[in-house]
Length: 461
Ligand code: UD1
Ligand code: CA
Image 1 (cartoon, rainbow, N blue to C red):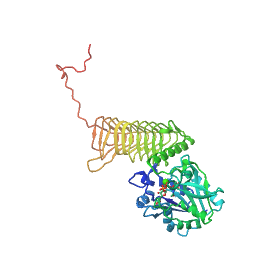
Image 2: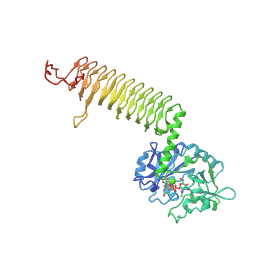
Image 3: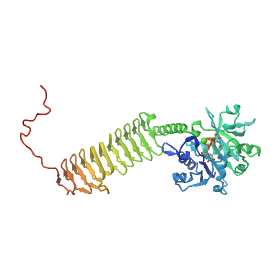
Protein backbone atom coordinates (compact mmCIF):
# COMPACT_ATOMS: atom_id res chain seq x y z
CA UNK A 1 0.00 0.00 0.00
CA UNK A 2 1.39 3.37 -0.90
CA UNK A 3 0.91 5.88 1.90
CA UNK A 4 1.04 9.64 2.25
CA UNK A 5 0.84 10.99 5.76
CA UNK A 6 -0.68 14.36 6.56
CA UNK A 7 0.08 15.57 10.05
CA UNK A 8 -2.20 18.31 11.32
CA UNK A 9 -0.17 20.72 13.37
CA UNK A 10 -1.53 24.18 12.65
CA UNK A 11 -3.90 24.48 15.57
CA UNK A 12 -3.34 27.41 17.89
CA UNK A 13 -3.21 25.25 20.98
CA UNK A 14 -4.72 28.09 22.98
CA UNK A 15 -5.44 25.82 25.89
CA UNK A 16 -1.69 25.37 26.49
CA UNK A 17 -1.29 29.09 27.22
CA UNK A 18 2.14 28.95 25.63
CA UNK A 19 4.26 31.40 23.69
CA UNK A 20 5.05 28.78 21.06
CA UNK A 21 3.09 26.17 19.08
CA UNK A 22 1.50 23.33 20.98
CA UNK A 23 3.04 20.55 18.90
CA UNK A 24 6.54 21.76 19.84
CA UNK A 25 6.04 20.89 23.49
CA UNK A 26 8.31 18.05 24.46
CA UNK A 27 7.49 14.69 25.91
CA UNK A 28 10.50 12.75 27.13
CA UNK A 29 12.85 14.97 25.20
CA UNK A 30 11.07 14.78 21.86
CA UNK A 31 8.54 17.28 20.56
CA UNK A 32 5.06 15.89 20.13
CA UNK A 33 5.36 16.58 16.43
CA UNK A 34 8.63 14.66 16.15
CA UNK A 35 7.01 11.64 17.78
CA UNK A 36 4.19 11.73 15.25
CA UNK A 37 6.62 12.19 12.36
CA UNK A 38 8.51 9.18 13.65
CA UNK A 39 5.28 7.17 13.60
CA UNK A 40 4.67 8.30 10.01
CA UNK A 41 8.12 7.05 9.06
CA UNK A 42 7.53 3.73 10.75
CA UNK A 43 4.42 3.07 8.70
CA UNK A 44 6.66 3.71 5.68
CA UNK A 45 4.83 6.79 4.42
CA UNK A 46 6.43 7.78 1.15
CA UNK A 47 5.26 11.35 1.60
CA UNK A 48 5.00 13.20 4.90
CA UNK A 49 3.21 16.53 4.87
CA UNK A 50 3.05 18.69 7.97
CA UNK A 51 0.29 21.29 7.99
CA UNK A 52 1.49 24.27 10.01
CA UNK A 53 0.14 27.72 10.74
CA UNK A 54 1.70 31.06 11.40
CA UNK A 55 4.57 29.37 13.26
CA UNK A 56 5.49 27.36 10.17
CA UNK A 57 9.12 28.53 10.24
CA UNK A 58 9.62 27.44 13.83
CA UNK A 59 8.03 24.11 13.02
CA UNK A 60 10.11 23.62 9.90
CA UNK A 61 13.27 24.33 11.87
CA UNK A 62 12.28 21.96 14.65
CA UNK A 63 12.13 19.07 12.19
CA UNK A 64 14.84 19.98 9.66
CA UNK A 65 14.42 16.76 7.72
CA UNK A 66 14.46 16.34 3.99
CA UNK A 67 11.73 13.75 3.77
CA UNK A 68 9.08 16.18 5.04
CA UNK A 69 7.15 18.81 3.13
CA UNK A 70 5.12 21.58 4.67
CA UNK A 71 1.75 23.07 3.87
CA UNK A 72 0.70 26.43 5.23
CA UNK A 73 -2.67 26.92 6.83
CA UNK A 74 -2.70 30.67 7.24
CA UNK A 75 -5.53 30.77 9.72
CA UNK A 76 -6.56 27.93 11.98
CA UNK A 77 -9.97 27.38 10.45
CA UNK A 78 -10.41 23.83 11.65
CA UNK A 79 -9.13 20.32 11.00
CA UNK A 80 -11.11 20.00 7.75
CA UNK A 81 -9.61 23.18 6.40
CA UNK A 82 -6.15 22.00 7.52
CA UNK A 83 -6.41 18.88 5.38
CA UNK A 84 -7.61 20.97 2.43
CA UNK A 85 -4.44 23.01 2.76
CA UNK A 86 -2.36 19.85 2.28
CA UNK A 87 -4.00 19.00 -1.02
CA UNK A 88 -1.54 20.90 -3.16
CA UNK A 89 1.37 19.07 -1.55
CA UNK A 90 -0.44 15.77 -2.10
CA UNK A 91 -0.57 16.61 -5.79
CA UNK A 92 -1.86 13.70 -7.79
CA UNK A 93 -1.11 11.15 -5.05
CA UNK A 94 -3.09 8.00 -5.82
CA UNK A 95 -2.52 5.89 -2.71
CA UNK A 96 -3.94 6.06 0.80
CA UNK A 97 -3.76 9.34 2.66
CA UNK A 98 -3.36 8.83 6.39
CA UNK A 99 -4.23 11.77 8.62
CA UNK A 100 -2.52 12.03 12.00
CA UNK A 101 -2.83 14.69 14.69
CA UNK A 102 0.30 16.48 15.75
CA UNK A 103 -0.94 16.55 19.33
CA UNK A 104 -1.27 12.79 19.85
CA UNK A 105 2.30 11.73 20.64
CA UNK A 106 1.65 8.34 22.24
CA UNK A 107 0.32 6.75 19.11
CA UNK A 108 2.06 3.47 18.21
CA UNK A 109 2.80 2.59 14.64
CA UNK A 110 1.62 -1.02 15.08
CA UNK A 111 -1.88 0.25 15.78
CA UNK A 112 -1.92 2.32 12.61
CA UNK A 113 -0.67 -0.66 10.62
CA UNK A 114 -3.50 -2.75 12.03
CA UNK A 115 -5.96 0.02 11.19
CA UNK A 116 -4.65 0.25 7.63
CA UNK A 117 -4.95 -3.50 7.18
CA UNK A 118 -8.64 -3.25 8.10
CA UNK A 119 -9.09 -0.27 5.81
CA UNK A 120 -7.61 -2.24 2.96
CA UNK A 121 -9.32 -5.53 3.78
CA UNK A 122 -12.75 -3.86 3.72
CA UNK A 123 -11.89 -1.79 0.62
CA UNK A 124 -13.11 1.40 2.22
CA UNK A 125 -12.72 4.83 0.78
CA UNK A 126 -12.73 6.33 4.24
CA UNK A 127 -11.83 4.81 7.59
CA UNK A 128 -11.57 6.37 10.99
CA UNK A 129 -9.80 4.95 13.99
CA UNK A 130 -11.83 5.11 17.19
CA UNK A 131 -11.34 3.95 20.74
CA UNK A 132 -13.36 3.51 23.93
CA UNK A 133 -12.63 6.28 26.39
CA UNK A 134 -13.29 5.99 30.11
CA UNK A 135 -13.91 9.69 30.08
CA UNK A 136 -14.96 10.73 26.58
CA UNK A 137 -15.20 14.44 27.32
CA UNK A 138 -13.40 16.67 24.85
CA UNK A 139 -13.41 14.06 22.08
CA UNK A 140 -15.69 13.72 19.07
CA UNK A 141 -18.28 10.95 19.66
CA UNK A 142 -18.74 8.21 17.08
CA UNK A 143 -22.41 7.89 16.14
CA UNK A 144 -23.32 4.50 14.69
CA UNK A 145 -26.36 3.64 12.57
CA UNK A 146 -28.81 0.81 13.25
CA UNK A 147 -26.60 -1.67 11.39
CA UNK A 148 -23.51 -0.74 13.40
CA UNK A 149 -21.93 1.26 10.59
CA UNK A 150 -20.54 4.70 11.23
CA UNK A 151 -23.06 7.48 10.65
CA UNK A 152 -21.24 10.58 11.86
CA UNK A 153 -18.92 12.11 14.41
CA UNK A 154 -20.33 14.73 16.76
CA UNK A 155 -17.99 17.08 18.56
CA UNK A 156 -18.40 17.63 22.28
CA UNK A 157 -19.70 21.16 21.73
CA UNK A 158 -22.46 19.99 19.41
CA UNK A 159 -23.41 16.80 21.26
CA UNK A 160 -26.71 16.41 23.04
CA UNK A 161 -26.89 14.87 26.53
CA UNK A 162 -27.51 11.35 25.17
CA UNK A 163 -24.69 11.61 22.67
CA UNK A 164 -22.36 12.80 25.39
CA UNK A 165 -22.69 9.45 27.13
CA UNK A 166 -21.24 7.64 24.10
CA UNK A 167 -17.80 6.35 24.96
CA UNK A 168 -16.61 5.43 21.50
CA UNK A 169 -14.66 8.47 20.35
CA UNK A 170 -12.67 9.71 17.38
CA UNK A 171 -8.87 9.34 17.65
CA UNK A 172 -8.29 11.85 14.85
CA UNK A 173 -6.59 9.18 12.71
CA UNK A 174 -8.15 8.65 9.29
CA UNK A 175 -7.38 6.79 6.08
CA UNK A 176 -8.71 8.24 2.84
CA UNK A 177 -8.64 6.99 -0.70
CA UNK A 178 -9.48 8.90 -3.86
CA UNK A 179 -13.10 9.94 -3.61
CA UNK A 180 -12.94 10.41 0.16
CA UNK A 181 -10.65 13.41 -0.33
CA UNK A 182 -13.30 14.98 -2.53
CA UNK A 183 -15.70 14.92 0.41
CA UNK A 184 -13.69 17.78 1.87
CA UNK A 185 -15.36 20.11 -0.60
CA UNK A 186 -18.73 19.36 0.93
CA UNK A 187 -17.79 20.40 4.47
CA UNK A 188 -19.65 23.46 5.66
CA UNK A 189 -18.44 25.79 8.31
CA UNK A 190 -19.53 24.88 11.84
CA UNK A 191 -21.43 27.89 13.11
CA UNK A 192 -20.76 27.28 16.78
CA UNK A 193 -16.98 27.28 16.36
CA UNK A 194 -16.46 29.01 13.02
CA UNK A 195 -14.35 26.05 11.86
CA UNK A 196 -14.41 23.42 9.15
CA UNK A 197 -14.52 20.10 10.95
CA UNK A 198 -12.73 17.23 9.27
CA UNK A 199 -15.05 14.95 11.22
CA UNK A 200 -17.93 16.12 9.04
CA UNK A 201 -16.68 14.02 6.13
CA UNK A 202 -18.03 10.95 7.92
CA UNK A 203 -21.66 12.08 7.69
CA UNK A 204 -20.97 13.25 4.18
CA UNK A 205 -19.68 9.79 3.22
CA UNK A 206 -22.84 8.21 4.64
CA UNK A 207 -24.95 10.68 2.65
CA UNK A 208 -23.15 9.95 -0.63
CA UNK A 209 -22.79 6.23 0.00
CA UNK A 210 -19.02 6.40 -0.02
CA UNK A 211 -17.77 3.27 1.71
CA UNK A 212 -16.70 4.23 5.21
CA UNK A 213 -16.06 2.52 8.54
CA UNK A 214 -14.88 3.24 12.07
CA UNK A 215 -12.54 0.71 13.74
CA UNK A 216 -12.48 0.69 17.48
CA UNK A 217 -8.94 -0.56 18.15
CA UNK A 218 -6.03 0.46 20.32
CA UNK A 219 -5.97 1.67 23.88
CA UNK A 220 -7.19 4.93 25.29
CA UNK A 221 -3.73 5.95 26.54
CA UNK A 222 -2.31 5.69 23.10
CA UNK A 223 -4.69 8.18 21.56
CA UNK A 224 -4.60 10.72 24.26
CA UNK A 225 -4.66 14.17 22.68
CA UNK A 226 -2.64 16.83 24.45
CA UNK A 227 -4.51 20.11 24.66
CA UNK A 228 -3.60 21.40 28.13
CA UNK A 229 -0.58 21.44 30.43
CA UNK A 230 -2.27 18.88 32.58
CA UNK A 231 -2.65 16.54 29.62
CA UNK A 232 0.97 17.19 28.70
CA UNK A 233 2.01 16.06 32.16
CA UNK A 234 -0.16 12.96 31.91
CA UNK A 235 1.16 12.09 28.46
CA UNK A 236 4.73 12.55 29.73
CA UNK A 237 4.01 10.27 32.64
CA UNK A 238 2.69 7.55 30.33
CA UNK A 239 5.56 7.90 27.89
CA UNK A 240 8.07 7.73 30.75
CA UNK A 241 6.53 4.54 31.99
CA UNK A 242 6.58 3.09 28.50
CA UNK A 243 10.28 3.87 28.04
CA UNK A 244 11.34 2.55 31.45
CA UNK A 245 9.35 -0.65 30.89
CA UNK A 246 11.02 -1.13 27.55
CA UNK A 247 14.51 -0.95 29.08
CA UNK A 248 13.64 -3.08 32.04
CA UNK A 249 12.36 -5.75 29.66
CA UNK A 250 15.77 -5.57 28.01
CA UNK A 251 17.62 -6.28 31.22
CA UNK A 252 18.12 -2.93 32.95
CA UNK A 253 17.45 -2.63 36.68
CA UNK A 254 15.65 0.48 37.93
CA UNK A 255 15.72 0.79 41.71
CA UNK A 256 12.78 3.21 41.63
CA UNK A 257 11.29 3.36 38.12
CA UNK A 258 8.86 6.12 39.06
CA UNK A 259 11.60 8.64 39.74
CA UNK A 260 13.71 8.06 36.64
CA UNK A 261 13.42 10.17 33.47
CA UNK A 262 14.72 8.54 30.32
CA UNK A 263 14.36 10.36 27.02
CA UNK A 264 13.06 8.49 24.01
CA UNK A 265 16.42 8.65 22.22
CA UNK A 266 18.46 7.06 25.02
CA UNK A 267 19.85 3.53 24.94
CA UNK A 268 20.89 1.50 28.02
CA UNK A 269 22.93 -1.71 28.03
CA UNK A 270 22.00 -4.93 29.75
CA UNK A 271 22.68 -5.39 33.47
CA UNK A 272 23.04 -1.69 34.09
CA UNK A 273 21.55 -0.40 37.34
CA UNK A 274 19.83 2.96 37.53
CA UNK A 275 19.22 4.47 40.96
CA UNK A 276 16.44 6.97 41.83
CA UNK A 277 16.22 10.53 40.53
CA UNK A 278 18.30 9.94 37.46
CA UNK A 279 17.79 11.92 34.23
CA UNK A 280 19.11 10.39 31.03
CA UNK A 281 18.56 12.86 28.24
CA UNK A 282 18.93 13.43 24.51
CA UNK A 283 20.78 10.68 22.69
CA UNK A 284 22.71 9.43 25.70
CA UNK A 285 24.10 5.91 25.42
CA UNK A 286 24.81 3.82 28.48
CA UNK A 287 26.83 0.65 28.01
CA UNK A 288 26.40 -2.68 29.76
CA UNK A 289 26.84 -3.17 33.49
CA UNK A 290 27.03 0.53 34.19
CA UNK A 291 25.83 1.89 37.52
CA UNK A 292 24.22 5.30 37.75
CA UNK A 293 23.78 6.37 41.36
CA UNK A 294 21.11 8.83 42.57
CA UNK A 295 20.58 12.43 41.43
CA UNK A 296 22.60 12.20 38.24
CA UNK A 297 21.80 14.03 34.99
CA UNK A 298 23.42 12.84 31.78
CA UNK A 299 22.76 14.74 28.55
CA UNK A 300 23.88 13.56 25.10
CA UNK A 301 26.74 11.57 26.54
CA UNK A 302 28.33 8.25 25.85
CA UNK A 303 28.89 6.13 28.94
CA UNK A 304 30.91 2.95 28.47
CA UNK A 305 30.48 -0.53 29.90
CA UNK A 306 31.03 -1.00 33.60
CA UNK A 307 31.26 2.72 34.28
CA UNK A 308 30.18 3.95 37.69
CA UNK A 309 28.64 7.42 37.92
CA UNK A 310 28.37 8.36 41.56
CA UNK A 311 25.75 10.55 43.16
CA UNK A 312 24.89 14.13 42.16
CA UNK A 313 26.93 14.29 38.98
CA UNK A 314 26.14 16.21 35.77
CA UNK A 315 27.54 15.00 32.45
CA UNK A 316 26.92 16.92 29.22
CA UNK A 317 28.02 16.01 25.70
CA UNK A 318 30.95 14.00 26.92
CA UNK A 319 32.34 10.49 26.81
CA UNK A 320 33.19 8.22 29.70
CA UNK A 321 35.03 5.09 28.60
CA UNK A 322 34.70 1.61 29.99
CA UNK A 323 35.49 0.93 33.61
CA UNK A 324 35.90 4.60 34.49
CA UNK A 325 34.36 6.20 37.53
CA UNK A 326 32.97 9.72 37.87
CA UNK A 327 31.66 11.58 40.91
CA UNK A 328 30.20 12.10 43.42
CA UNK A 329 29.53 15.78 42.72
CA UNK A 330 31.43 15.95 39.45
CA UNK A 331 30.59 18.11 36.44
CA UNK A 332 31.63 17.04 32.95
CA UNK A 333 30.95 19.90 30.61
CA UNK A 334 30.76 19.50 26.82
CA UNK A 335 33.68 18.04 24.95
CA UNK A 336 35.17 16.01 27.77
CA UNK A 337 36.45 12.49 27.57
CA UNK A 338 37.34 10.23 30.45
CA UNK A 339 39.51 7.28 29.36
CA UNK A 340 39.28 3.61 30.26
CA UNK A 341 39.42 3.00 34.01
CA UNK A 342 40.19 6.65 34.68
CA UNK A 343 38.80 8.29 37.79
CA UNK A 344 37.20 11.70 38.20
CA UNK A 345 36.35 12.26 41.83
CA UNK A 346 34.36 14.65 43.95
CA UNK A 347 34.14 18.34 43.12
CA UNK A 348 35.99 18.00 39.85
CA UNK A 349 34.86 20.04 36.84
CA UNK A 350 35.98 19.18 33.33
CA UNK A 351 35.46 21.26 30.22
CA UNK A 352 36.87 20.09 26.88
CA UNK A 353 39.22 17.95 28.91
CA UNK A 354 40.51 14.66 27.61
CA UNK A 355 41.77 12.35 30.32
CA UNK A 356 43.78 9.31 29.26
CA UNK A 357 43.49 5.73 30.41
CA UNK A 358 44.10 5.03 34.10
CA UNK A 359 44.57 8.70 34.96
CA UNK A 360 43.07 10.18 38.10
CA UNK A 361 41.73 13.53 39.19
CA UNK A 362 40.25 12.50 42.48
CA UNK A 363 39.46 15.72 44.28
CA UNK A 364 38.59 19.40 43.86
CA UNK A 365 39.88 20.39 40.43
CA UNK A 366 39.05 22.48 37.41
CA UNK A 367 40.44 21.03 34.21
CA UNK A 368 39.49 23.02 31.12
CA UNK A 369 40.85 22.86 27.55
CA UNK A 370 43.19 20.16 28.70
CA UNK A 371 44.76 17.07 27.21
CA UNK A 372 45.91 14.60 29.78
CA UNK A 373 47.79 11.43 28.84
CA UNK A 374 47.72 7.99 30.43
CA UNK A 375 48.49 7.18 34.05
CA UNK A 376 48.56 10.83 35.08
CA UNK A 377 47.87 11.77 38.68
CA UNK A 378 46.21 15.12 39.27
CA UNK A 379 46.56 16.19 42.88
CA UNK A 380 43.75 17.72 44.91
CA UNK A 381 43.03 21.34 44.12
CA UNK A 382 44.71 21.43 40.72
CA UNK A 383 43.45 24.24 38.51
CA UNK A 384 44.06 24.87 34.84
CA UNK A 385 44.13 28.63 34.29
CA UNK A 386 42.83 28.37 30.76
CA UNK A 387 41.41 31.85 30.30
CA UNK A 388 43.40 35.07 30.11
CA UNK A 389 40.32 37.25 29.99
CA UNK A 390 40.23 37.22 26.21
CA UNK A 391 41.26 33.82 24.94
CA UNK A 392 41.16 30.21 26.04
CA UNK A 393 44.44 28.28 26.07
CA UNK A 394 45.35 24.63 26.22
CA UNK A 395 47.16 22.66 28.89
CA UNK A 396 48.90 19.43 27.92
CA UNK A 397 49.98 16.86 30.46
CA UNK A 398 51.83 13.94 28.89
CA UNK A 399 51.72 10.31 30.00
CA UNK A 400 52.76 9.51 33.54
CA UNK A 401 52.90 13.08 34.82
CA UNK A 402 52.43 13.59 38.56
CA UNK A 403 50.83 16.89 39.53
CA UNK A 404 51.16 17.73 43.22
CA UNK A 405 48.21 19.17 45.12
CA UNK A 406 47.17 22.79 44.80
CA UNK A 407 48.91 23.40 41.50
CA UNK A 408 47.93 26.05 39.00
CA UNK A 409 48.76 25.35 35.39
CA UNK A 410 48.78 28.66 33.53
CA UNK A 411 47.95 27.86 29.92
CA UNK A 412 49.26 27.57 27.32
CA UNK A 413 51.58 25.17 29.01
CA UNK A 414 52.90 21.67 28.44
CA UNK A 415 54.22 19.23 31.01
CA UNK A 416 56.45 16.54 29.51
CA UNK A 417 56.18 12.82 29.94
CA UNK A 418 56.88 11.39 33.37
CA UNK A 419 57.71 14.71 35.02
CA UNK A 420 56.67 15.81 38.51
CA UNK A 421 55.20 19.05 39.75
CA UNK A 422 55.70 19.88 43.39
CA UNK A 423 52.63 20.69 45.45
CA UNK A 424 51.56 24.32 45.57
CA UNK A 425 53.28 25.32 42.31
CA UNK A 426 52.19 27.84 39.73
CA UNK A 427 53.43 26.48 36.43
CA UNK A 428 53.84 29.12 33.75
CA UNK A 429 56.57 27.54 31.62
CA UNK A 430 56.71 24.22 29.81
CA UNK A 431 58.24 21.38 31.81
CA UNK A 432 60.55 18.98 29.94
CA UNK A 433 60.03 15.23 30.27
CA UNK A 434 61.32 13.57 33.40
CA UNK A 435 61.89 16.85 35.30
CA UNK A 436 60.69 18.18 38.62
CA UNK A 437 59.07 21.61 38.49
CA UNK A 438 58.60 23.64 41.65
CA UNK A 439 57.58 27.24 41.97
CA UNK A 440 56.93 27.90 45.58
CA UNK A 441 58.98 30.18 47.81
CA UNK A 442 61.46 28.36 49.93
CA UNK A 443 60.17 27.62 53.39
CA UNK A 444 61.80 29.65 56.19
CA UNK A 445 62.11 28.56 59.81
CA UNK A 446 62.54 31.14 62.56
CA UNK A 447 63.36 29.15 65.65
CA UNK A 448 61.65 30.18 68.89
CA UNK A 449 59.62 32.87 67.13
CA UNK A 450 56.51 31.97 69.04
CA UNK A 451 58.13 32.30 72.41
CA UNK A 452 56.19 34.65 74.65
CA UNK A 453 53.10 34.36 72.44
CA UNK A 454 50.05 32.62 73.66
CA UNK A 455 50.25 29.08 72.39
CA UNK A 456 47.10 28.38 70.49
CA UNK A 457 45.13 25.22 70.67
CA UNK A 458 46.83 24.16 73.86
CA UNK A 459 44.86 21.25 75.26
CA UNK A 460 43.10 22.05 78.52
CA UNK A 461 44.17 20.04 81.50
C1 UD1 B 1 -10.14 16.64 17.24
C2 UD1 B 1 -11.36 16.03 16.56
C3 UD1 B 1 -12.09 15.13 17.56
C4 UD1 B 1 -11.13 14.07 18.08
C5 UD1 B 1 -9.86 14.69 18.64
C6 UD1 B 1 -8.84 13.61 18.94
C7 UD1 B 1 -12.19 17.64 14.89
C8 UD1 B 1 -13.19 18.69 14.62
N1 UD1 B 1 -12.25 17.08 16.10
O1 UD1 B 1 -10.61 17.46 18.29
O2 UD1 B 1 -13.19 14.52 16.93
O3 UD1 B 1 -11.78 13.29 19.06
O4 UD1 B 1 -9.27 15.61 17.70
O5 UD1 B 1 -7.76 14.11 19.66
O6 UD1 B 1 -11.40 17.30 14.04
N2 UD1 B 1 -5.37 21.66 13.65
C9 UD1 B 1 -4.91 22.29 12.52
N3 UD1 B 1 -5.61 23.37 12.04
C10 UD1 B 1 -6.73 23.82 12.63
C11 UD1 B 1 -7.21 23.16 13.78
C12 UD1 B 1 -6.50 22.07 14.25
O7 UD1 B 1 -3.88 21.92 11.96
O8 UD1 B 1 -7.28 24.81 12.11
C13 UD1 B 1 -4.59 20.53 14.18
C14 UD1 B 1 -4.09 20.77 15.60
O9 UD1 B 1 -2.79 21.33 15.60
C15 UD1 B 1 -4.10 19.38 16.21
C16 UD1 B 1 -5.16 18.65 15.42
O10 UD1 B 1 -5.41 19.39 14.25
O11 UD1 B 1 -2.86 18.73 16.05
C17 UD1 B 1 -6.45 18.49 16.24
O12 UD1 B 1 -6.93 19.78 16.56
P1 UD1 B 1 -7.56 20.11 17.97
O13 UD1 B 1 -8.00 21.52 17.97
O14 UD1 B 1 -6.69 19.65 19.05
O15 UD1 B 1 -8.88 19.19 17.89
P2 UD1 B 1 -9.69 18.55 19.07
O16 UD1 B 1 -10.63 19.58 19.63
O17 UD1 B 1 -8.79 17.87 20.01
CA1 CA C 1 -6.62 17.74 20.28
